[in-house]
Image 1 (cartoon, helix red, strand yellow):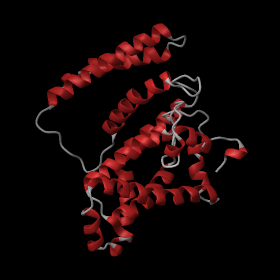
Image 2 (image 1 turned 90 degrees about the horizontal axis):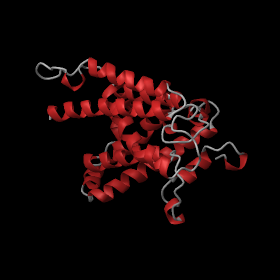
Image 3 (image 1 turned 180 degrees about the vertical axis):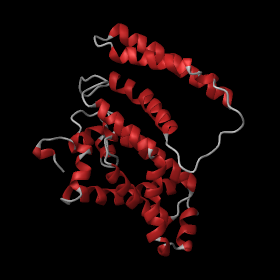
Length: 268
């Protein structure tokens, strides 16, 4: 409901101003705090949540995902910043070196969400439409939603593993993936440092088995939601230790931090 949206906008602007003020009072460097307060004040003067709308908002054929970016950055920050402050693996600031670079990657990937989504789905629909077997898809959809969820995870993970391995072992692919490994600090934001070619190629190939198997929408969306949070979590600066049987099945931050290490014995 629009009144809820307006109230949420006003609340976020107010919270932004208060957090900017707190940052200015508590931090030695004042620039971020003043910037936060200035942006909140500018948003409020521009109308904030009170901006009038005449009728329904028109949908454009081409759009930038600024709303997608704002929702994601807010949600992920609310989840992961407290976790990293309460259970840190390494003592580092939230605004550690390189955070602006990672934020720009995060912004660009979300602004281009419409283009990247179209590119992710295109290869499967164009080059593999001939391989669709309605009988197989009907059998897959007849399975319980939980079984389909794990089927999505298995099909996508096996595919992404080999794509990821190719990026590491093929000289012409490595420069694209090397961008992701250029982060010198690991936290929830570091996982967003990805070359657009890396993202599109990996997701396009990973989508092919999901397209051919024809999973129902609900378990597919549930898997996409899980893998989105998991991809952020495994880069997070948290010191959680999991039982070995869990680490044998699901990648954890401790395991994935090895993958990003520079020591020779940790590589691959």
